[in-house]
Image 1 (spheres, rainbow, N blue to C red):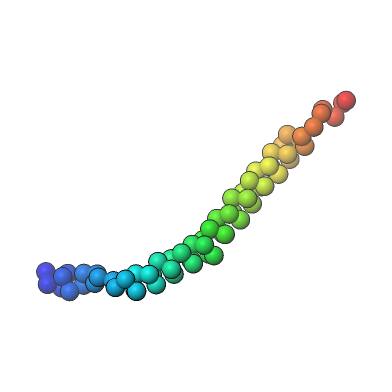
Image 2 (tube, rainbow, N blue to C red; image 1 turned 30 degrees about the horizontal axis):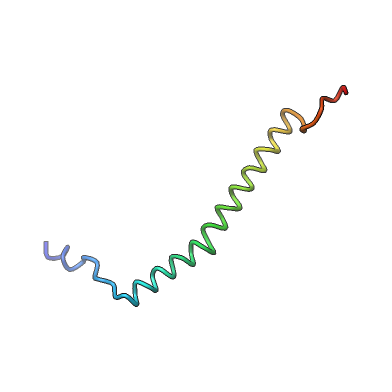
Length: 64
């Protein structure tokens, strides 16, 4: 039981907490979110492309 108490997370100092939050922000702002944005835009483009392959491009019917 005392092992669990010894392994409990220690309190982070305000300076350490700021560093952790800054690192988390940088990872999210310049790592995760750009990848998510590229994935969403790419996925949307892929869906439009597949839709147009199946149903044809937008516009009036080909006979007119």
